[in-house]
Length: 85
Image (cartoon, rainbow, N blue to C red; front, side):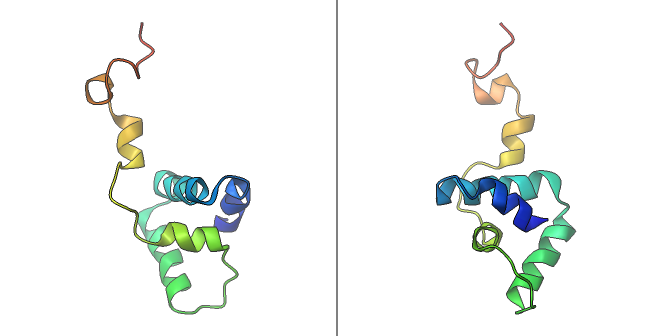
């Protein structure tokens, strides 16, 4: 499934693709699923994992949490982000 996510983002510039995959994994996968995939990739398991997924599994650079962007209200994001009029 992770490779299918990578296939979707493969046409994006690499930096954006890795960020998109990382955001998707953290938004829709459980922490246990991510840790299992990360462990399988790290221990040399015979899995054919797309290089963009491997990059997305590395620790994220310091910055914004993708979940916080989704759940934050206009007070946190600023009035220009809200479409409430």
